[in-house]
Length: 109
Image (cartoon, rainbow, N blue to C red; front, side, top):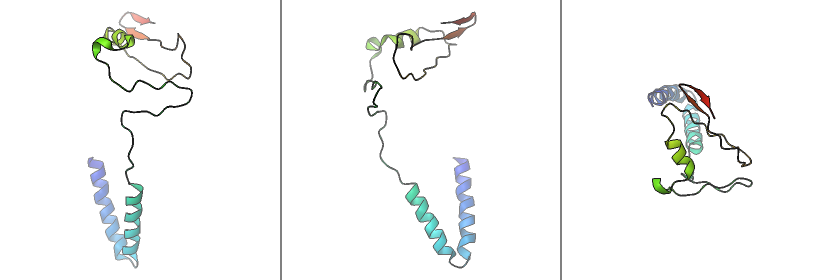
């Protein structure tokens, strides 16, 4: 945020220098209009997903802990120093969900 603020101050000084030139004010207005056009916000879905061909769409709801899928219960029982990586897979197979843990005694899968 501080960097963005400082860049805005620097841009203001630059715009003041450009505005002093002949037709400079028109250039500054055009640059400002281009910035406002480019920075326009479009609505987007938060915490949602549209269906993608060939992939399963995840459930669009949260489960209470006692009804959560089994994988979350397994992950909850893992030691605190475990690194868990979820990698995307194009096809779901029985071996596509592997949990590799690294503990103080070594690596186990």
